[in-house]
Image 1 (spheres, helix red, strand yellow):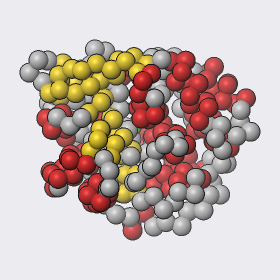
Image 2 (cartoon, protein in one colour):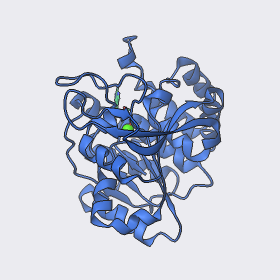
Image 3 (cartoon, protein in one colour):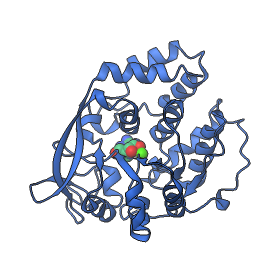
Image 4 (cartoon, protein in one colour):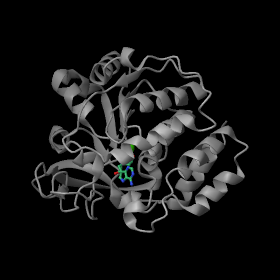
Length: 304
Ligand code: AGV
Ligand code: CA
Protein backbone atom coordinates (compact mmCIF):
# COMPACT_ATOMS: atom_id res chain seq x y z
CA UNK A 1 0.00 0.00 0.00
CA UNK A 2 1.13 3.51 -0.89
CA UNK A 3 -0.64 6.17 1.17
CA UNK A 4 -0.22 9.80 2.13
CA UNK A 5 -1.30 9.92 5.73
CA UNK A 6 -4.66 11.69 5.54
CA UNK A 7 -7.54 10.51 7.70
CA UNK A 8 -9.10 8.33 5.01
CA UNK A 9 -5.68 6.91 4.14
CA UNK A 10 -5.39 5.65 7.72
CA UNK A 11 -8.93 4.32 7.59
CA UNK A 12 -8.03 2.57 4.35
CA UNK A 13 -4.96 0.97 5.89
CA UNK A 14 -7.12 -0.20 8.77
CA UNK A 15 -9.75 -1.61 6.44
CA UNK A 16 -7.14 -3.39 4.32
CA UNK A 17 -5.83 -5.12 7.44
CA UNK A 18 -9.32 -6.46 8.19
CA UNK A 19 -9.45 -8.24 4.80
CA UNK A 20 -8.77 -11.90 5.46
CA UNK A 21 -7.76 -12.72 1.88
CA UNK A 22 -5.21 -9.91 1.64
CA UNK A 23 -1.58 -10.23 2.68
CA UNK A 24 -0.07 -6.77 3.14
CA UNK A 25 3.66 -6.83 2.36
CA UNK A 26 4.54 -3.19 2.92
CA UNK A 27 3.17 0.27 3.59
CA UNK A 28 4.79 3.37 2.10
CA UNK A 29 3.96 6.80 3.47
CA UNK A 30 4.43 9.94 1.35
CA UNK A 31 4.27 13.45 2.86
CA UNK A 32 1.65 14.76 0.43
CA UNK A 33 -1.63 15.21 2.37
CA UNK A 34 0.30 14.91 5.67
CA UNK A 35 3.53 15.72 7.45
CA UNK A 36 5.64 12.61 7.54
CA UNK A 37 6.46 12.02 11.21
CA UNK A 38 2.91 11.99 12.61
CA UNK A 39 1.72 9.95 9.62
CA UNK A 40 4.35 7.27 10.19
CA UNK A 41 3.38 7.19 13.84
CA UNK A 42 -0.30 6.60 13.07
CA UNK A 43 0.49 4.10 10.34
CA UNK A 44 2.62 2.11 12.76
CA UNK A 45 0.00 2.29 15.51
CA UNK A 46 -2.64 0.94 13.11
CA UNK A 47 -0.35 -1.99 12.20
CA UNK A 48 0.14 -2.62 15.89
CA UNK A 49 -3.61 -2.83 16.56
CA UNK A 50 -3.59 -5.90 14.34
CA UNK A 51 -0.37 -7.33 15.75
CA UNK A 52 1.13 -6.64 12.30
CA UNK A 53 3.97 -4.32 13.30
CA UNK A 54 6.35 -6.57 11.37
CA UNK A 55 4.93 -5.28 8.09
CA UNK A 56 7.62 -2.88 6.88
CA UNK A 57 6.87 0.84 6.57
CA UNK A 58 8.73 2.84 3.94
CA UNK A 59 9.38 6.53 4.30
CA UNK A 60 9.14 8.88 1.35
CA UNK A 61 10.66 12.35 1.51
CA UNK A 62 9.40 13.44 -1.87
CA UNK A 63 8.16 16.95 -2.46
CA UNK A 64 5.31 17.22 -4.86
CA UNK A 65 5.28 19.81 -7.59
CA UNK A 66 2.07 21.29 -6.15
CA UNK A 67 1.94 21.06 -2.36
CA UNK A 68 -1.22 20.29 -0.38
CA UNK A 69 -2.47 23.10 1.88
CA UNK A 70 -0.69 22.99 5.24
CA UNK A 71 -4.03 23.04 7.08
CA UNK A 72 -4.86 19.67 5.52
CA UNK A 73 -1.37 18.27 6.04
CA UNK A 74 -1.49 19.10 9.73
CA UNK A 75 -4.82 17.39 10.36
CA UNK A 76 -3.46 13.85 10.75
CA UNK A 77 -1.47 14.96 13.81
CA UNK A 78 -4.75 14.77 15.72
CA UNK A 79 -5.03 11.07 14.90
CA UNK A 80 -2.23 10.12 17.27
CA UNK A 81 -3.93 11.94 20.12
CA UNK A 82 -7.25 10.08 19.79
CA UNK A 83 -8.19 8.10 22.91
CA UNK A 84 -7.91 4.82 21.00
CA UNK A 85 -4.39 5.54 19.75
CA UNK A 86 -2.69 7.84 22.25
CA UNK A 87 -1.51 5.01 24.48
CA UNK A 88 -0.51 2.59 21.73
CA UNK A 89 3.22 2.10 22.17
CA UNK A 90 5.35 3.73 19.54
CA UNK A 91 8.93 2.59 19.73
CA UNK A 92 9.94 3.32 16.17
CA UNK A 93 12.48 5.85 14.98
CA UNK A 94 10.90 7.37 11.83
CA UNK A 95 14.39 8.18 10.54
CA UNK A 96 15.50 4.55 10.69
CA UNK A 97 12.91 3.35 8.18
CA UNK A 98 13.77 2.19 4.67
CA UNK A 99 13.28 4.72 1.92
CA UNK A 100 9.92 4.15 0.20
CA UNK A 101 11.22 3.56 -3.34
CA UNK A 102 13.83 1.08 -2.03
CA UNK A 103 11.18 -0.78 -0.06
CA UNK A 104 8.88 -0.97 -3.06
CA UNK A 105 11.67 -2.35 -5.27
CA UNK A 106 12.73 -4.89 -2.61
CA UNK A 107 9.25 -6.14 -1.83
CA UNK A 108 8.33 -6.56 -5.49
CA UNK A 109 11.65 -8.14 -6.42
CA UNK A 110 11.34 -10.69 -3.62
CA UNK A 111 7.62 -11.38 -4.03
CA UNK A 112 6.85 -15.03 -4.82
CA UNK A 113 3.62 -14.15 -6.60
CA UNK A 114 2.13 -11.16 -8.38
CA UNK A 115 1.40 -8.09 -6.25
CA UNK A 116 -1.45 -5.59 -6.26
CA UNK A 117 -0.38 -2.03 -5.51
CA UNK A 118 -3.04 0.07 -3.80
CA UNK A 119 -2.26 3.79 -4.04
CA UNK A 120 -4.31 6.24 -1.99
CA UNK A 121 -2.00 9.22 -2.51
CA UNK A 122 0.30 10.32 -5.33
CA UNK A 123 2.05 7.73 -7.54
CA UNK A 124 5.55 9.27 -7.44
CA UNK A 125 7.24 6.38 -5.57
CA UNK A 126 5.94 3.75 -7.97
CA UNK A 127 7.04 5.69 -11.05
CA UNK A 128 10.54 6.21 -9.67
CA UNK A 129 10.76 2.55 -8.61
CA UNK A 130 9.94 1.37 -12.14
CA UNK A 131 12.50 3.76 -13.64
CA UNK A 132 15.20 2.45 -11.33
CA UNK A 133 14.20 -1.22 -11.52
CA UNK A 134 12.15 -1.89 -14.67
CA UNK A 135 11.97 -5.63 -13.87
CA UNK A 136 9.43 -4.98 -11.08
CA UNK A 137 6.81 -4.25 -13.74
CA UNK A 138 6.51 -8.01 -14.28
CA UNK A 139 5.59 -8.49 -10.61
CA UNK A 140 2.60 -6.16 -10.74
CA UNK A 141 -0.77 -7.82 -11.01
CA UNK A 142 -2.70 -4.58 -10.86
CA UNK A 143 -2.40 -0.98 -9.67
CA UNK A 144 -5.52 0.36 -7.96
CA UNK A 145 -5.25 4.13 -7.63
CA UNK A 146 -7.62 6.65 -6.07
CA UNK A 147 -7.02 9.35 -8.63
CA UNK A 148 -8.44 11.45 -11.40
CA UNK A 149 -11.59 13.26 -12.48
CA UNK A 150 -12.62 12.10 -15.93
CA UNK A 151 -16.16 13.28 -16.66
CA UNK A 152 -16.60 15.51 -13.63
CA UNK A 153 -14.96 18.60 -12.17
CA UNK A 154 -11.78 18.21 -10.15
CA UNK A 155 -11.28 19.03 -6.47
CA UNK A 156 -8.27 21.34 -6.72
CA UNK A 157 -9.16 24.95 -6.06
CA UNK A 158 -6.09 27.13 -6.11
CA UNK A 159 -4.11 29.75 -7.97
CA UNK A 160 -2.87 29.02 -11.49
CA UNK A 161 -5.50 26.31 -11.85
CA UNK A 162 -8.88 25.95 -13.52
CA UNK A 163 -10.35 23.34 -11.17
CA UNK A 164 -10.21 20.34 -13.51
CA UNK A 165 -7.73 18.17 -11.54
CA UNK A 166 -7.99 15.75 -8.65
CA UNK A 167 -5.42 16.31 -5.89
CA UNK A 168 -3.50 13.00 -5.96
CA UNK A 169 -2.62 13.66 -9.60
CA UNK A 170 -2.14 17.41 -9.21
CA UNK A 171 0.48 16.94 -6.44
CA UNK A 172 2.83 15.37 -9.01
CA UNK A 173 1.37 15.73 -12.53
CA UNK A 174 4.68 14.75 -14.11
CA UNK A 175 4.87 11.32 -12.45
CA UNK A 176 1.15 10.84 -13.03
CA UNK A 177 1.57 11.50 -16.75
CA UNK A 178 4.44 9.00 -16.80
CA UNK A 179 2.40 6.38 -14.95
CA UNK A 180 -0.31 6.53 -17.63
CA UNK A 181 2.40 6.26 -20.30
CA UNK A 182 3.73 3.06 -18.70
CA UNK A 183 0.42 1.36 -19.58
CA UNK A 184 0.41 -0.91 -16.53
CA UNK A 185 -2.74 -2.83 -15.60
CA UNK A 186 -4.17 0.26 -13.91
CA UNK A 187 -7.61 0.85 -12.42
CA UNK A 188 -8.36 4.39 -11.31
CA UNK A 189 -11.02 5.05 -8.69
CA UNK A 190 -11.68 8.69 -9.66
CA UNK A 191 -13.95 11.42 -8.32
CA UNK A 192 -16.51 10.24 -10.90
CA UNK A 193 -17.26 7.31 -8.58
CA UNK A 194 -16.14 8.61 -5.17
CA UNK A 195 -18.63 11.48 -5.57
CA UNK A 196 -21.35 8.83 -5.08
CA UNK A 197 -20.15 7.95 -1.58
CA UNK A 198 -19.91 10.85 0.85
CA UNK A 199 -19.26 10.25 4.55
CA UNK A 200 -22.85 10.70 5.69
CA UNK A 201 -24.28 11.33 9.14
CA UNK A 202 -26.47 8.28 8.60
CA UNK A 203 -23.40 6.09 8.06
CA UNK A 204 -21.66 7.58 11.11
CA UNK A 205 -24.77 6.99 13.18
CA UNK A 206 -24.84 3.29 12.24
CA UNK A 207 -21.16 3.06 13.01
CA UNK A 208 -21.70 4.61 16.43
CA UNK A 209 -24.36 2.01 17.28
CA UNK A 210 -21.73 -0.69 16.86
CA UNK A 211 -18.98 1.16 18.72
CA UNK A 212 -18.54 -1.62 21.25
CA UNK A 213 -16.33 -3.04 18.51
CA UNK A 214 -12.93 -1.43 18.95
CA UNK A 215 -12.39 -0.78 15.23
CA UNK A 216 -15.82 0.81 14.83
CA UNK A 217 -15.14 3.08 17.76
CA UNK A 218 -11.76 4.14 16.36
CA UNK A 219 -13.13 4.61 12.83
CA UNK A 220 -15.96 6.75 14.23
CA UNK A 221 -13.44 8.96 16.01
CA UNK A 222 -11.43 9.32 12.78
CA UNK A 223 -14.41 10.16 10.58
CA UNK A 224 -15.77 12.65 13.11
CA UNK A 225 -12.60 14.68 12.48
CA UNK A 226 -13.60 15.07 8.84
CA UNK A 227 -17.01 16.62 9.35
CA UNK A 228 -16.82 20.27 8.39
CA UNK A 229 -19.71 22.59 8.95
CA UNK A 230 -19.76 24.49 5.68
CA UNK A 231 -22.21 22.72 3.34
CA UNK A 232 -20.37 23.14 0.07
CA UNK A 233 -18.89 20.47 -2.19
CA UNK A 234 -15.36 21.35 -1.26
CA UNK A 235 -16.04 20.73 2.40
CA UNK A 236 -17.74 17.37 1.97
CA UNK A 237 -15.48 14.49 2.91
CA UNK A 238 -15.90 11.53 0.61
CA UNK A 239 -14.97 7.88 0.94
CA UNK A 240 -12.18 8.54 -1.56
CA UNK A 241 -9.46 6.15 -0.44
CA UNK A 242 -11.84 3.86 1.42
CA UNK A 243 -13.73 3.18 -1.80
CA UNK A 244 -10.48 2.45 -3.67
CA UNK A 245 -9.50 0.03 -0.90
CA UNK A 246 -12.82 -1.79 -1.22
CA UNK A 247 -12.13 -2.32 -4.90
CA UNK A 248 -9.46 -4.81 -3.77
CA UNK A 249 -12.00 -7.07 -2.06
CA UNK A 250 -15.25 -6.42 -3.95
CA UNK A 251 -14.45 -5.44 -7.56
CA UNK A 252 -17.64 -7.18 -8.71
CA UNK A 253 -19.69 -4.41 -7.09
CA UNK A 254 -18.11 -1.71 -9.25
CA UNK A 255 -18.90 -0.68 -12.82
CA UNK A 256 -15.60 -0.40 -14.64
CA UNK A 257 -14.98 1.08 -18.06
CA UNK A 258 -11.99 0.66 -20.36
CA UNK A 259 -10.83 4.06 -21.60
CA UNK A 260 -7.85 5.84 -23.09
CA UNK A 261 -6.52 8.88 -21.28
CA UNK A 262 -3.53 11.10 -20.63
CA UNK A 263 -2.53 13.61 -17.95
CA UNK A 264 -1.82 17.30 -18.46
CA UNK A 265 1.36 18.46 -16.75
CA UNK A 266 1.08 22.21 -17.12
CA UNK A 267 -1.19 25.10 -16.10
CA UNK A 268 -3.99 25.97 -16.21
CA UNK A 269 -5.12 22.33 -16.02
CA UNK A 270 -2.05 20.57 -14.57
CA UNK A 271 -3.14 17.16 -13.32
CA UNK A 272 -6.30 16.95 -15.40
CA UNK A 273 -7.04 13.43 -16.66
CA UNK A 274 -8.08 13.74 -20.30
CA UNK A 275 -10.03 11.11 -22.16
CA UNK A 276 -8.94 10.82 -25.77
CA UNK A 277 -8.35 8.21 -28.45
CA UNK A 278 -4.66 9.19 -28.51
CA UNK A 279 -4.30 8.49 -24.78
CA UNK A 280 -3.15 5.36 -22.96
CA UNK A 281 -5.38 2.41 -22.07
CA UNK A 282 -6.53 2.06 -18.47
CA UNK A 283 -9.66 1.21 -16.54
CA UNK A 284 -11.75 3.63 -14.53
CA UNK A 285 -14.50 2.84 -12.04
CA UNK A 286 -17.60 4.88 -12.83
CA UNK A 287 -20.18 3.44 -10.44
CA UNK A 288 -20.50 1.29 -7.33
CA UNK A 289 -23.31 -0.46 -5.52
CA UNK A 290 -23.55 2.07 -2.72
CA UNK A 291 -25.63 0.01 -0.31
CA UNK A 292 -23.29 -2.97 -0.59
CA UNK A 293 -20.28 -0.71 -0.11
CA UNK A 294 -21.50 1.02 3.08
CA UNK A 295 -22.68 -2.34 4.49
CA UNK A 296 -19.35 -3.97 3.73
CA UNK A 297 -17.39 -1.24 5.52
CA UNK A 298 -19.67 -1.43 8.56
CA UNK A 299 -19.27 -5.19 8.63
CA UNK A 300 -15.48 -5.20 8.35
CA UNK A 301 -15.30 -2.74 11.22
CA UNK A 302 -17.00 -5.31 13.43
CA UNK A 303 -14.08 -7.69 13.11
CA UNK A 304 -12.33 -6.52 16.32
O1 AGV B 1 -8.53 13.97 -3.73
C1 AGV B 1 -8.77 13.02 -2.79
C2 AGV B 1 -7.52 12.64 -2.00
C3 AGV B 1 -7.74 11.28 -1.30
O2 AGV B 1 -6.60 10.44 -1.46
N1 AGV B 1 -7.13 13.54 -0.89
C4 AGV B 1 -7.98 13.12 0.24
C5 AGV B 1 -8.00 11.61 0.17
O3 AGV B 1 -7.03 11.07 1.06
C6 AGV B 1 -7.00 14.97 -1.14
C7 AGV B 1 -8.15 15.86 -0.72
C8 AGV B 1 -9.18 16.37 -1.48
N2 AGV B 1 -10.01 17.14 -0.72
C9 AGV B 1 -9.52 17.11 0.57
C10 AGV B 1 -8.37 16.32 0.59
C11 AGV B 1 -9.96 17.69 1.79
N3 AGV B 1 -11.07 18.47 1.85
N4 AGV B 1 -9.24 17.45 2.90
C12 AGV B 1 -8.14 16.68 2.85
N5 AGV B 1 -7.68 16.10 1.72
CA1 CA C 1 -5.02 10.04 0.32
